[in-house]
Length: 336
Ligand code: PLP
Ligand code: COI
Image (tube, rainbow, N blue to C red):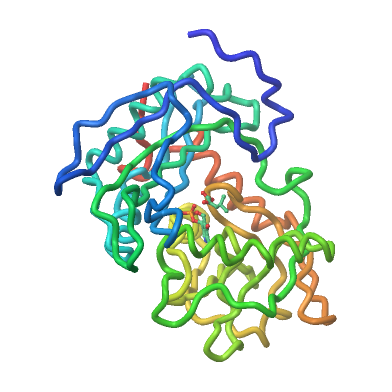
């Protein structure tokens, strides 16, 4: 199959319209059979629930070309399960998890020419999402929904590629106790837009959020979980108000089972971040992006950037995703 003629190496993290996307509609209490369409635009009523009350959630995952030329996807079953959790929290109908995985595979397969080649450094980002589409003016859930999957080829999430990031401890909060921080609701991102724009204006790459109840524990950033390293131990915050990152869960396993490290998933106090030697932001888009500095209101803690441990974690995780290293059972879904 002929690949599209793109300059894969220079892709950033942006939207490139690809050929086909998947659409399924929920009406009268049931999902239709769904299918692929070339139509990238969506027409909906001015009073659609998603437009008025932001009833929408999404997922983020990637397809890769492996060393031996297969197109694969990483742990899509976990994205299906997390999207089901998001839907339940937002009073949306669950798109069945097996159909979610099938829809993702179908969309990637249909856009195989857009999957970046092995060795290009780029990947195919997959965006499943759902929204309430029928008119709603009283505050209540929609009764009709659309589930969609589109794909877009991407390069590194942070401008400038792999380099030590400078992040700041945020004065604004991302998630309330007993709120929606643990699900992938569009509203969590809408409310972060002011803060990320301000962070960029002030010369920071991202915001690190602390727990909004006590403001003494590290939570995560606007688009990734956070990991710290000290003396061969990987430490990552445990919190009910952060997104359960599939990358972070995978890294914990990789650190323990592949690299023989100790791992600690526990509350991480803001007061201890100066004790760590390495720090990274992890997520589908971020992969593991090295942090060089965290600015806590003028007290700047510095880290090794792509230090030896973050580098090993990065190499092992991407090695598994790209078929260079054996994967744990069930982690790699071969698409074609
Ligand atoms: N935290 C937030 C707020 C995110 O948006 C993401 C991205 O999906 C993550 C963490 C990382 O999650 P995952 O590794 O499942 O992509
Ligand atoms: C992802 O990593 O898939 C995300 O959804 C993060 C988003 C900020 C791009």
